[in-house]
Length: 492
Image (cartoon, rainbow, N blue to C red; front, side, top):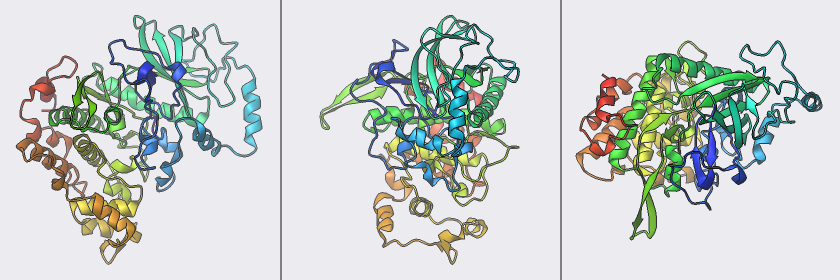
């Protein structure tokens, strides 16, 4: 349902992310795209797994399981452990969609050389390679350095590969030779259809915000290249999660949290005003425009610590974004950022994004996930431990009565799971790192975003007027040369 992912990696682990999922980066393909970006440690690839729960691991890098509309199970908890971004499990997952007898026919068709067919899009390429365009047996377009698509995109190198296609570093000759990331979707109909859904959302965003003022990632172009949907995007830097991970999960400062929070609220408010719900907000889908950093040595912890220089961010990954009039899937959002109304299958709309933002701000401030679980009942128990009992109205209305007994959550606090929740969760305000007013203001904002009842949850228009954003913080004035105070006027 979501087009997820990472657009590219760069030599020395500088990654420029955008909307691609399941990218299996190859060290040999890492090349520096932007010379101004800081060099990261060559020996620690961002694609190595960390110690987070197995449920979180598929989301550590490439923005989740892209095109989720195609791939959800009913409760979506199969998302953990499904993907191995280093290669192995992508194929297993794709094979699960193939009927047993179709594999031979699929291979036979792909061995044939394909040329342009009248059924292709009006925007299909009619360039010089029309007679030799080929796919490999997985459906990827076979291309190499120096090839030119649409008489415009000169391929430089392969930046990554995943279940749904490849991302190529290209020179865009119609943009003054600028480097862009070109996502080339496999020639498989279900993946192509999912790409069309994302393109539809991105075109609406471009139409409503042609000057890119609302901090959503910008799509430059799309086209159908002999059966392969292709999308080009602007280059961005590390995701806010990857920067956190590479920095040993050192939290962002309160001023950095303030600036990033404001931008996220502004961007998602723009989506909501245009009758869209993102449905998959998380730190992996918030990207820095530039992730250059300074390094200071922490004598006490005996380690280097990074501070990002510029906290300007963009919201990415609109593959699961849903218009108000479209079908709403039962389950949306990555587990850790999933709102209670989604878990209880009460229906969802824009407020589910607000819940996700509340979880994101907590993670920026503390450096770890608020709801570290992959089980619905345990998730609800964590919510109750942090925010109090689930409202009785929601309990009466839900079809998921198996989670409740006599109007209360059916939860054994003396079980091993009960002890885990008790030891790892506590009332929200007890996570405060300081008694300073601005810290209490942040938690007041997070509390309002984590209101159980969607109708009572804070709107993003109200969030942007919250006292947490009212004081001018000079250190937060970093958004692409524009005044943060100037950006604040947009929300009013």
